[in-house]
Length: 262
Image 1 (cartoon, one colour):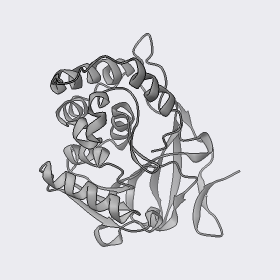
Image 2: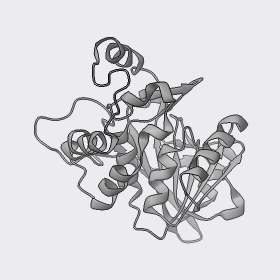
Image 3: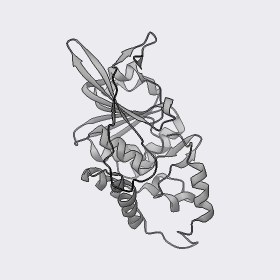
Image 4: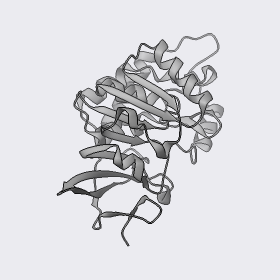
């Protein structure tokens, strides 16, 4: 996930926060519950399975040790390069759009810290992660194994190539903003499956859920826009979700990328 917009907020916390003093042990379980109530439930996510998963998973173990006191703030936390641990609300919204019931096979393209993979693994049967950076893939895989996840597989590879060996997938999640759903990735999605991804054209601040619908011997790809995926907590809880149905379907471009019709 992009770090754009997170650093200024993060620096302000560094300068003003007095949540943890030297030598003081932080009550992570309490901080997690506060995070769930104030950041996720307050924005309208009510799915008990999602809330329980976010409440169990120790987000502080996915961030650099020196930043653990900020692990339950409503911000992305940098882990090196352009990568970050996404906010819990973002991950919760992805999980809600994915509509996981427990028996799904999920493909995640871009593992980042492994935090989102952990949430997806709590809510589905199997999660397969493809990460372009070998170092990040190995680091995240080791972290997830240490935390006891046995239903997550990780490999290094191109995001636009997916992972054909374990296809088809019920859900595919693309973590970083992208302009299109790669053809090879769409091919690995089963009929009536969903792709959830942030769109680069909106600086990653809008997300789209694509649905692959059978149509005779072929299929249609339709999109439902979700916005915003970040921002202020509403004064009155409002259920986040699809707020704009794309009027056009998606078609295959000449270079094999799935693009919106104009």
